[in-house]
Image (cartoon, rainbow, N blue to C red):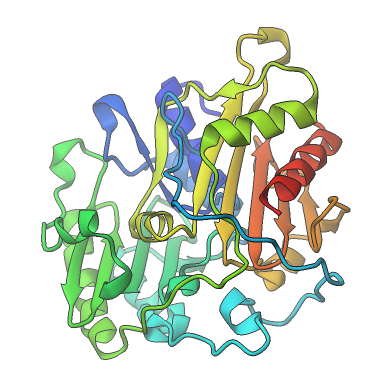
Length: 373
């Protein structure tokens, strides 16, 4: 982590690495801000080819992820490990007998914007970023894309598109508010409805956001996707206290507490998925033990499936996690974190930390999988 950042901003950067929520909001004076600058650029590069990968880490005085109500269901019986495919796998299309949803813009980032269009808007060469994540916008009929500068300078652009029927009221009430980076010098974000689609564009300048929002909005209106729900048999997102209890017992040291950082995942994908029970995020630490400080970010994606193409590209090493269908360990996925990506039925779990052994991460993952089953 960069020593020039405050603890809150470091937490915000962590949050970008471990949940798959591609954007994190630092709390306090920077609440609502989109993490920018050379450090964030380096982070994007680190996870691009790879949220949060999972790694998108984030937290507040630790953020407890809202838990949808309802009885838990039993996870499907573990099957054989999936074979990496040539293209990203959507949990919706991977379910036998389940009709794949109509995704916004066919779930194709090339239909959202081309690299050339984003490059022209920002004035620097931009390329589509890919990274590991626990969350799949396609579960609810959406698409989420991010571009980062491919050369000198720093720019990022993020675009999320969802059928308006799955967008929570808390977001609908903010539709049409223009981006205003001058509020804190960091946030540039606009969300607007176009026909039956809701589009969010994030960027580093207001004029970039507004021009790309108009461009994507016209396309999204013609292909808004179809509202759907996460499949039956998925996990019910637990509250963070339950996650802490399970993780602490599995680690066996009795010292894990809710993380006292100051950031939360944010952005349209996070807001839509979490409101519909398709995303959860918790961060834990034992910072009271200064000599063995541990921070661990845990993201849950009910209804999601891992991007096996990205797993292969990032050289994930297959590991065994009790109760899971498949799991991969990514050593040094970023400069500060190892990542464990787990598939259990139609659910994804990611754990990111730079302060635990692989075995400890596996123990915690197995305990969470069993608890959710």
